[in-house]
Image 1 (cartoon, rainbow, N blue to C red):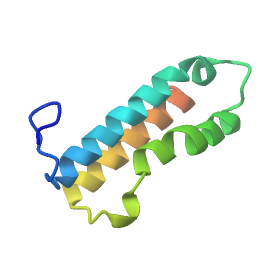
Image 2: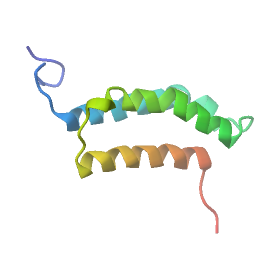
Image 3: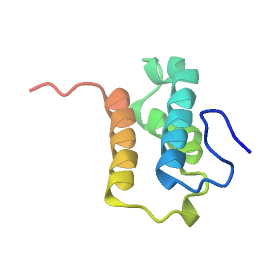
Image 4: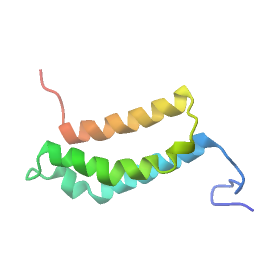
Amino acid sequence: MLRKGGDTVNDNSLEKEIQRRILAGNRTYFAAIILFRSRLLSTATKIILYKTLIRPVVSYGAEAWTLTKKEEQALIIFERKIFRRIYGPKYQ
């Protein structure tokens, strides 16, 4: 049985699953982008929103994952990207 993209149902590729989770996290972020861009909400509130809205979407089923360095790095990069968007640029 084939799914969209030519993947089989029995394909247990963790790398593909993590990429799907990151894409779902991006969709969740952009669905709530009005909240994350709002100047009325504090940074602490935006972090709480991230932890309750986006992180569970990305980490769903993570208890059973055995990550390689590459997959772990992809998740860290995604999290840093969201934090950069919340905190904004660093001025020196």
